[in-house]
Image (cartoon, rainbow, N blue to C red; front, side, top):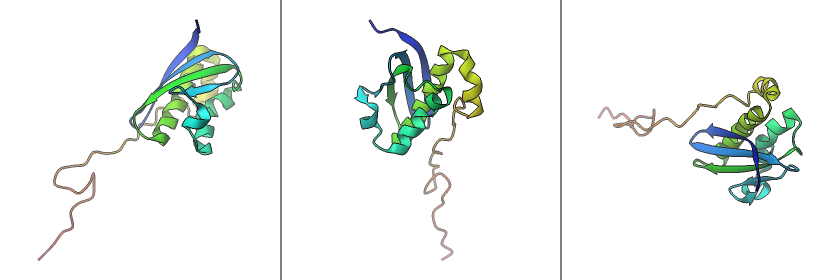
Length: 130
């Protein structure tokens, strides 16, 4: 029986990530796949690991992440937010470092909805005088 040390929920755009910290050696699994296979782009992998680097816990935990919704970039943001929240739930002394780097702040920017009578959220149809 594997025991979760802490849990955190991260959100970004339309993505939601549930993050579970477990005792281990630094392995990360996302939706049952190895971390490197789920996030093939190096920039996303670095982005997701930032809270672990700041708190110096890269090899302290195994991390299990369930993420759904949105695209790859939004999911990476949700994972980072979830990891940061889980680290605070595990040890409250991590809060200051994570807050200072902005990892606990929920990035609320979302796609604005399309309005009726327009071509997009803000773009109008072309005006024709004649």
